[in-house]
Image 1 (cartoon, rainbow, N blue to C red):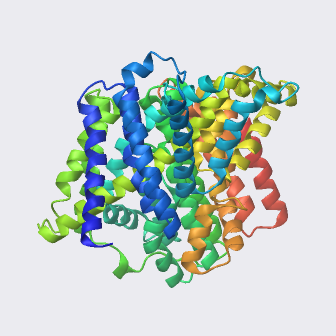
Image 2: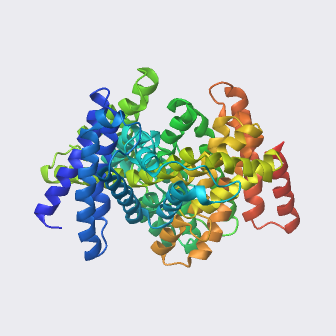
Image 3: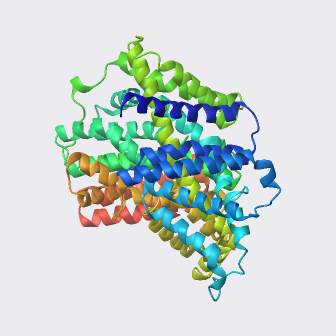
Length: 585
């Protein structure tokens, strides 16, 4: 990328950052202005920067120009369009609607591949032609102008509540993560982890667990987590003689936990706020103990593997000195402290608090861990922050805009209600069969689309059924969200496993088998949340919540040792059975 092109992308990155920060500080902006402009800023990153060949580059420019024009036209005419109540009044608006939907589908395809756009395309086809389907799954149909208008010029479909979450909250936290990671925060995560666990048996693996929990709490991406922390922990583990498959599995499993670790949760926390009506702080409080149990189960799994293999700790010369730990940790502790203080003490909204934390991160980019100011390095840090902000906001926008098509179609056609009825009848109105059907649906869909999108789609169709059977809304949402995450370590897709296996040049299936054993908490904790409802009621009943955490933690420890440790079959069976009983009583 030459200097001119790089400058253009930096300007676009700065525009993305300033636009989203400006929305928080400027007060109310009409949704049909902010949401289309959010898409317009994401278009070049999704369609041009992600182009893989000359044809994609050319079509990327064409679609970007069209998309920017269409989004700008909607923003400019938002007052008039609100009076149309989602009805297209002429052919030009009809062509614009078709063009916008095609553009969003192509954004998502380039960002994450075919599966999600295909689901959205099927949803659109159902919305336009569902009246020709006989039987229970047909619907009365709506005029094409009304259906496409609802999708593209009204505050539903593309510009619905889900996109509002992307614009107003997710983008801000993504920008926060980009600025935090452009400085010394990454080194701080690794140093704190090494100081806390480096000397222990299996210490190098435990460093991976702690650093991935810290890094994942702001990145929210299993793939990014593997690539960043894995670049340090994987060579360290293999150098000390860890089996390569186990080393890769540790990193894949630990990195996957970032999507369930507050505050970011891979954007899932903010989507959950919108869908459940529970405040963000309530989501964080509900999610924190299950996330802790996940990493605890991984930790115990490493201890169990230490009985089978010689898992050494970090060598003395590889452990950071106290001064480095303290100084580098400040690079993430200061912004995190600002974030939490602003939310919990000053009572600001999460997005406003994140803006203040971004400002703290911006200031910290001026210095390095030696408190030196180097103008060339400063420029590189800000450049990295702006580029990553633009890319990551566009990635999230592409996913959420495409998922919004599906959610919009479910609302217009009533298909979600019909699928809910199918789940209720298939389960006989019983909770655990309904949970099983939902878990299978989440796993299958999660294999094809990103976790947040899989969660949104599954909870839209299965969530009402689970709530009708008796679950609290937040229980149902967390259950669905956790099972949508299984695909990161479960074959045949297991994206985090593929990346980690490639980094150590090991067979991915071996890595997946180790990962499934080590990450067994990912399969069991959602069930534990149903069997032990107080696990997610830390605010309203802290004592019972902590007791449930201890009980579930003991159950997970027993099951992990039963699955992994080299005991006799009788002892292993007893541990698994005893852990299972303890989990569900």
